[in-house]
Length: 86
Length: 390
Image 1: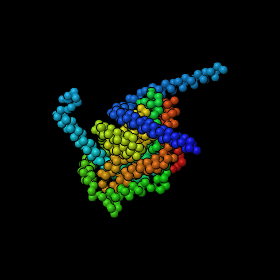
Image 2: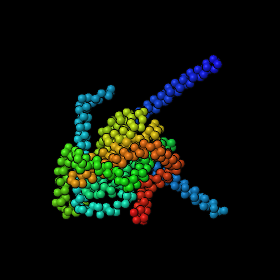
Image 3: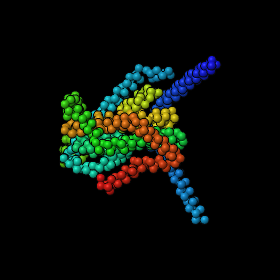
Image 4: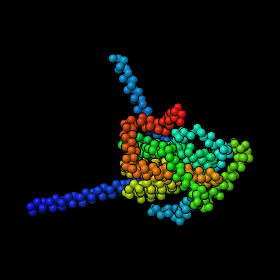
């Protein structure tokens, strides 16, 4: 009986230890995340520039959309050609 | 002259202070011009339409048409402040508030195009694009959901219009408790508006001078808000950083307040919501962290229309304030009933994440989404509602 109580107490102590460690880790993670957020906020001037140049930044997007459209048509053409040959 | 240690000389500090004072005087001047422009539109609309404003806008009596006008106009101008200020001016000139309410709701949808365009700049960055795109479109989905919930409710009950009328009447003397005697804006704006009205009257017949006043007012608002935005961005970048730093790690309410305060400072919700796109794209802020910030932007942007409405004089002043309050109450209801209820709150998050997922694999979805939500669906809705005879 005594052994069982001791065993339970040991387990409870281990849980408390684990919870303390877990909370410390969670806090560490939160602190690191927040530090990273503060660092990113310091780059706000660059992000304002990004907003100001939103139209010129769309060049890449148009390029990719054009490429995807061409690929799509090419696939369709190839499928049709295959069908005809069969 | 500055030293290597970064310490500035006295003359440099004096020079910078003078620049700052000059810029703030310019901001005050631009705000004054905004008020004059809104009043000029109101006056012009009244002169041009006489008592027929209601008939003139009969085509927009259908709420879908009003919604689409607000959406497309804002998407094209990319400034909800500009569109809502113009709407305030038109209401002051006789446009019925019931017609203007869906337009204001549409302005909320239209303004979301800017941050979506900003997010497309990250298109080559894979997961970064996915996060940025989701952060941008969460605003769209939230505002769309607001319209789906509140537009039919408003049509059925008129709760926004009534609450806004009561609030507006407090300011213009319609209610027993009035603070109209404290309004210093109207006497300041009136001489300039009278000057423009007389100037147009001197050269044009009445109806043409009214139309000229409307066009002049609209152009002035667009110019003023564009310049104001640029100037405030420059002046407020330090303050914006300060606000954002303060909101870090403080939960959704702090994010909401920060979004509202920042938008009030820069007078542009699209600027605020666009700024968080790269922040979310980098993965430093999660989608759930930026979400309340965008809602704050919705509330902060209402200040422009409220400010504009305070400049209106005459019997329609209460309606100008009413539509400005509708804009504010509508956005507040969105926060309380959509963000406040877990079921509704998660809908924009899930929709934005799903759209970002499919768009990452096929960029054509982005094109279809922008063209569809901001232009094609509105056109189809108008055609459908006309066909149904609404």
